[in-house]
Amino acid sequence: MNKKTIFFIVAGVGLIALAVLKLKSNKENAASKIYIHDVESSILIEGSNPIMHTYASAFSYLGTFDPFKQNTIGSDASGKLIRLDVEEGNRVSKGQIIAKIDDEMLQIQLQNLEVSIEGQRNDDARNIALSKDNAIPGIQLEKTKLGLRSSELQKKQLLKQLASTNITAPFSGVISKKLVDLGSVIGLGSPIVEITDISSLKLTISVPERDILKFKFGQAVEVSADIYPGQSFKGKVSYISVQADKSHNFKVQIIVSNPNSQLMAGMYGSASLSNTKSVTALSIPRKALIGSSKNPQVYIVKNGKAVLTSFNAGTSDGEFIEIISGISKNDKIVTKGQVNLEDNSNVKLIK
Image (cartoon, rainbow, N blue to C red; front, side, top):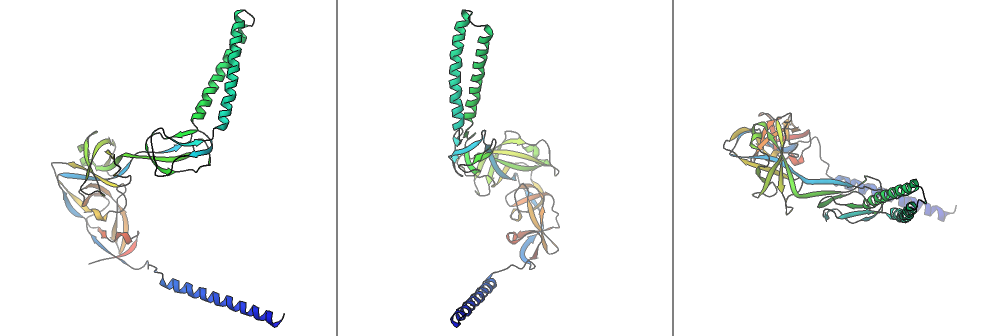
């Protein structure tokens, strides 16, 4: 090996070493700039104890809007998907074709069967004429008629199979999920799309035992949505549970008309009723609420930690939520700073 080759090798090794040192230095500089939260440090929060709050003559019950109809549309046939005419977010009408499965082989079978039926009808006509002259036995005529009838039944079956290759919308709505792609080979019952109808919505609320007799089937109810303060919507009671849950709450469902699609599934809503009597009950600020109205939760401060706790909620007036069970008057509820918390986070109350 000559000196020139050795020089190039040494120079190459040196350049590689410099590159490695530079990359290491850059990594250390970047790491030093990244903020890493100290999980042991305490997060500043504000909190308060539940209070006795009086709910005036108008009671409000918190709930969540659900779609009036929502269904996953499956295939009644199997084969290759040759048309898929919708995307997520598209509106569809009842009966509209949304997808098509390859039906070429079924069409060929149908054509063959129609040729066979035509021949059987000709045979039947000839046999009828021959039987009048007693040229053929009656049993032969009967077999011809039975064969023709069997073929016609097969044709009906094929026509039904052909119709099932057109996948149609069973009701009007919006494509909320597209579950296959064009060209996919699907089987019988394979899900194609999910259709959601929000022309009306179902508001499901949980009503304490003491208030359930205020609700009647078909009763008109004022409904509001958190996202539209000051605006009300017309609702009608469509379902009242005949059995309470373990906390003695009853499920009540209210149908709310939504012609302009102002409301969306998953939003918070409230159903309001007027009453001649007021109620005073242990309550917490509504701003302390975590999670959905179906599973209301709050953070409770215990031994310097924020503990995520579920509770049963009663009535609400927009500012406070009644506590049925799960929280005591001595619990310290986190009312500000929840966004930074996880279950069992270290916390410090602001004095």
